[in-house]
Length: 167
Image 1 (cartoon, rainbow, N blue to C red):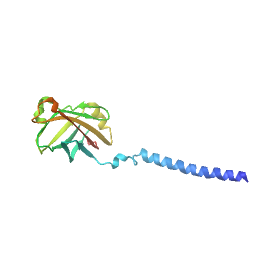
Image 2 (image 1 turned 45 degrees about the horizontal axis):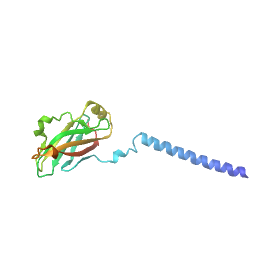
Image 3 (image 1 turned 45 degrees about the vertical axis):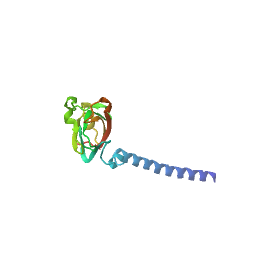
Image 4 (image 1 turned 120 degrees about the vertical axis):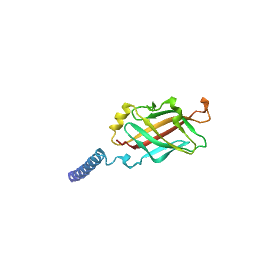
């Protein structure tokens, strides 16, 4: 009689073991084919710190550059001093199209907007071309107000673009 109980318990565990194994295989297949990828459900976004705001739907992430439209919310103009970016490959890299001697072109007047483009280095271009999904590019921008000329008034602003990479 004990033998029958042991056999029933073993058959019970075996049946549920196979069912559990089938569920694991199905979940693994769904994850492998990207059905369970949570980044599909996260919306594209552009975030800038104060005093600049990133205008909604006016940002593009490409394999070779990132472009965004920034609005100055201050009553004074803002002059960009330095513009670096970070990806999952490189950290704090100077935007290649930023020219420090051309400061006048990097100014946003009060209550106006301006589109900026940051060109990426070749390693980042290659990574973003092969990404095949959404990527995050973070920016660190140092700036000052137009009337402030002293080095002590330079401020740091952080922002990011999280978006699908366009070709």
